[in-house]
Image 1 (cartoon, rainbow, N blue to C red):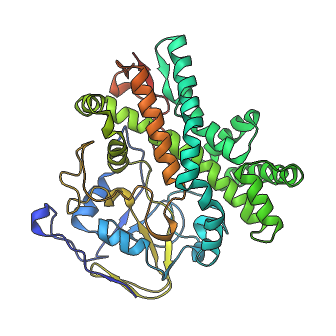
Image 2 (cartoon, helix red, strand yellow):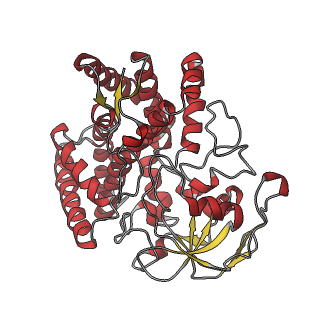
Image 3 (cartoon, one colour):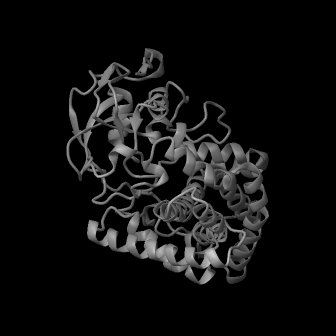
Length: 416
């Protein structure tokens, strides 16, 4: 049992916290324009850091933890289980469960440890550094094509979408002509507007695709990660459903999350001209700027995967009982004023606590280093090639994705 006593001091600007679980908040998770922060998260972080919520789908209620230290405590608590959420209709923001049962996101140790080990080396520092020249090559080619065609251009079509898609395709050994198929499946699986039946049908299609690719790779292995996973299956290190689940997870995160994160980063810089000017003047700030953009940008709608308590635990004055559902908000934790000074302000020179955009604990995102590298490559190449880059439309005319888990622009029109 873990006890967290993290409470704000009056100096941090927070309001006195309400009694934990005093009210159940109905949270519709409505679409938000641009990079606006969810008002309920904003309020709970300051007034009720351990709260009860009910989302649009599923059954029952759940705890929501929002403050930085409390989120870290919950995310690293071994008595909270992801595996127990399988086949349980937990209150949720989508009518279907995105993460597959038995996948790396919904397992506990030792299964989770085994699966993570199989992919961790691919996303380690050495492998990511080795991938950087390929990412740079793609960025140079794609921005070169933009320059050749002339302005305006949609960055989501010219760079932030195709580069991560191609890179994750390279990693998995997916033929280039199949990338568009994966993109179409991604759009349905990560949607909160599609029905359970529609999502299940697409999941079957993508599973069949990787099942067939696995048969091919078993006879014709390559140097890609998927071939390595197929070999590991042959040696009994993982099952066929686990193999498919890992491949789907890598595709979804590698294509969708990076596309939206980097698109949002470009938008944030273009709408904060003082920060953009500083980055141009001090390009050595780029890694620090990427970290601050990760902290500042609310990259998803609602919350991620839930956990189930296997024993009673206490968090910031709340008692979470065995069997109850718990969510954490990494977005809210990144705006905690007891950790980040003036947290609602973008400051690319900020040097405070690490952001929690990739999670914390055992389920920390395995692709974090790859995402950072892709962001650095795309931003540096884009700003280097187009010194007068700016939005091609008024901010109010931007179109933003609705009915999707990950937030980002439908299109990002730019000119130079």
